Length: 150
Image 1 (tube, rainbow, N blue to C red):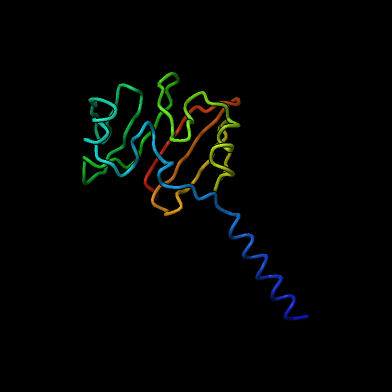
Image 2: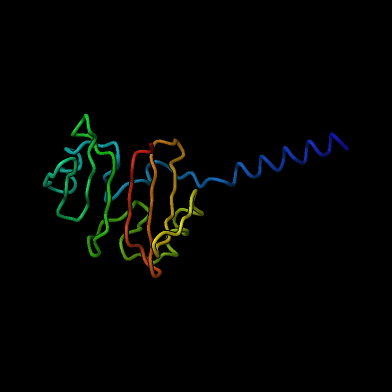
């Protein structure tokens, strides 16, 4: 009986640990071909010239890049919340995409929160270097954030 109980507990723990995280590939955490950890120079080559304010770079396509405090050429985080920008994740999720497309593209999130009328889906990269956060409200995507994982 003890042997069976121990085996059952171990099996249950293994199943829980394998289904707890979506663990998407790092290559899926990007906006319009630019990913956290890339240089501002690489982003400019894709998006065009940026306007700088403080520790942030703003691109004409509506993407905001938060820059590293010590290396101002390193992108820590990318954000978009402007409809019609045409910027999307590698899986095709962009602003105004249907909320149902999020789980279709990435599976169940690692973390799901409801905050201020928005559903927040968070996915972590399988190598734990980055995370993707998608916010939806009234059935549509309203904000996408790609960031280096803290």
